[in-house]
Image (spheres, rainbow, N blue to C red):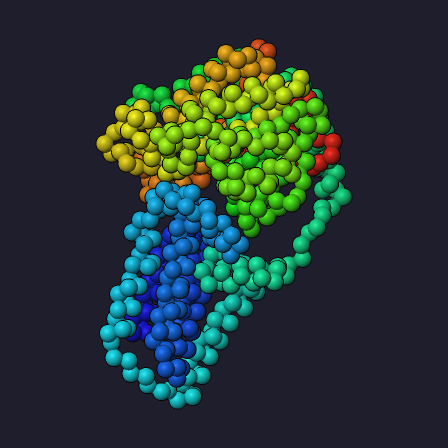
Length: 525
């Protein structure tokens, strides 16, 4: 039985490496896992424990289950999970459809055999052979010695951290150690004086052709769920995917950044919000809104409030999700309009929650309330929802004629979802025009993060075949940033490379304000 468990765990290690895209240092990563499995199973097998079969199975089952959780999490976040993320288990139900989409056979394989092995142990005769002390000690010791020597060599060659970040056992051991006793690496509590001076320079307003053109105007920022750049001005068999955004790009007073990239940590959509509003890097330990919920960040809401603005945030989902209800207060938002503030029926929900057209329609009414709150300009930060993975739109919301080869695929589903999101957004922009806000507001629209992963071989293949060029990491991470500035007579496409860190300094330049109290890691584009 032990040989069978060893072979199966070795095979699962290879499948785990495939699922988590281990592309560098593959041999040492595999050998470390191989030696740890061999050490544990041989130690159990040679022991005199009366129920060692069950100890062996427990080890096998635990490793299999954690590997299963890891690959499912990796498929969604493109990173291995951390112990600190256990506090977010209650949010799994909210992304249930997305998780189900990830449960393919190459991931379920990790736990598929557990009932069979358990049944085999229950039915088989258990002969507990006692081994002499020399064999019990010498064999596991030899394996452990080889493992220690290998780790020492990796450490000497500065490969220990790269290997540990990819290898199953060492990753989780280091993660648990960090979570329980902290990191033994000295943390940098500050930056050098030279670094600080450079960052302070970025807060200063530098004159350019767009500096201050939006001063005194309202600011409306729309973060569109999973909007990638490749769909802009894109046609599917002659069918326009984003007709409203394309039409917007042809108007006067539009700046389009076509080399703009996402920057996320553990918090996905919430990190896109945090980075864009604060020009600070997100946390890679756990969602920033959770890890630093007590921190006060001097970003866009506070900066505009200091100039007399009123700042509200709008999202059609539960206020507790990603800990938004607590994080928004310290970021300077004065009111959070969440799911509980919208009226909708069960038929007016898709996937995650309230559909975009209902969300935008009622958000426009709240903007009127925001505008009437006082005579000051306002900052409205709006987060859309419907185009969330797995992009499964009901038949009544499918407007594209999809080829048979793309039906039910992530590509076909995504294009349907984005066309719907664009239609709803177009109606909202039209509503802003009719209510007189469009010509008195700077309006910024950007995508929060990618929709289709290039790290998944199957998804990369279908995208590469469809687009006609390689769908790589660069293409996957690119999201559009479109800024409408009222009264501007020209339009421009800016090809300079930027990331979501650059959103705050770029918007501040347009609004004509300096960040006098905080620091920004981004640059004005």
